[in-house]
Image (cartoon, rainbow, N blue to C red):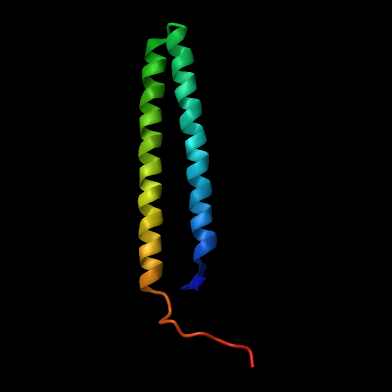
Length: 86
């Protein structure tokens, strides 16, 4: 469905793709933090764990953005009128 010139389904799929990408980076950051910790690089490990926490915050904000978009799209959706080819 298009609302205000935006394909809402495609837009939410794109938000999901960004979230999937950030989730992957979250997992890799976690792995790298533990590798650094196991090798004795404590400061590096701590910084990576902080980065991981920030990526978790990014994912939460993306969820909020998706919810806000869906709510706004529903409010601005047409009133149920349909167009038929004659």
